[in-house]
Amino acid sequence: MTDTDQAVIEVDGLRRGYSGGFEAVRGISFSVARGEVFALLGTNGAGKTSTVELLEGLAAPSAGTVRVFGLDPYRQRAAVRPRTGVMLQEGGFAADLTVTETVRMWSGVTSGARPAAEALALVGLTGRASVRVKQLSGGERRRLDLALALLGRPEVLFLDEPTTGMDPEGRRDTWELVRSLQAQGTTVLLTTHYLEEAEQLADRLAILHEGELVLSGTPAEVTATRPARIRFTLPAGVAPARLPLSLRAAAQGRRVEIRTERLQRSLAELLAWAEASDVELTGLDARSASLEEAFLEIAQQRRAGGLGDFDDQMAGAR
Ligand SMILES: Nc1ncnc2c1ncn2[C@@H]1O[C@H](COP(=O)(O)OP(=O)(O)OP(=O)(O)O)[C@@H](O)[C@H]1O
Image (cartoon, rainbow, N blue to C red; front, top):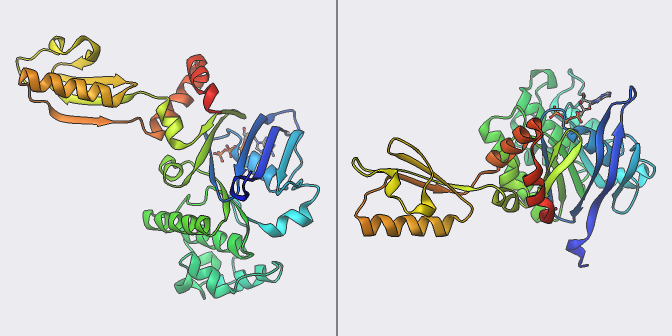
């Protein structure tokens, strides 16, 4: 194993039950290599935060193991915590402190902290340094949360829904920041409800559903499990039945949609047929499945209890 392949986070058969008997995390396993950005996705209540809290050492698992840098983040918290940065879903700030005062307060308990001005510049809060926390917008609070998570120059960064409440510009800035941290060697584990965020940032991702890991892989591996789509409209007088047999698909009037596992081949066949038949395809649109389509399909099929084929397809990608 090279240094970059080294698993910095290792999760094996992890379970978390809450008092009252509810089990929020039901035996999940995954690992994150040094320098990787890994995204945990899932519907509300899927168990993302419950999992991240175990990785952060805020609670002990009820079964299974978590290792961060090869250490137990709960029992060996004093060794693990200084090397990690944590951005929780709800940062507990003192409302009357200014932004700079908040950062300085945290610097006092962070070893090797960056200067406050540097941390604020990283997250684009320099202009708000003397504003009181209670006057910040929701998105600005998230930026402040992120600044605090970055204070100790962490090797591993846990980001729980980092861009929730941010405007599109704030989100793009945060993505840029995550990319530049990664370029400097930081390992990032994030949860998000924004599939575009996972698509943009994650080297690999895992989808949780009701406490179980339904699938994991690179964004391309995950979307490759769903069929691509070709859409177009046939000219008046050309019936969909004239399409080559292999391309016949759902048609509504002259509007045709073909779903295919082999986009390049189907498209080539379609274009060759159109050329040979002198048919003009209007509104031609061909694209691979998006992560959003894959995700929604998983959530819906799981709810309907019919994910057998999908599980089979993904067995190799896990
Ligand atoms: N302290 C607790 N006691 C009992 N059940 C809890 C507790 N905390 C969370 N849960 C339950 O565990 C499940 C998983 O919650 P968790 O917050 O981990 O999900 P999540 O994937 O982060 O959801 P979201 O996307 O809504 O943030 C939910 O059903 C939740 O109600």
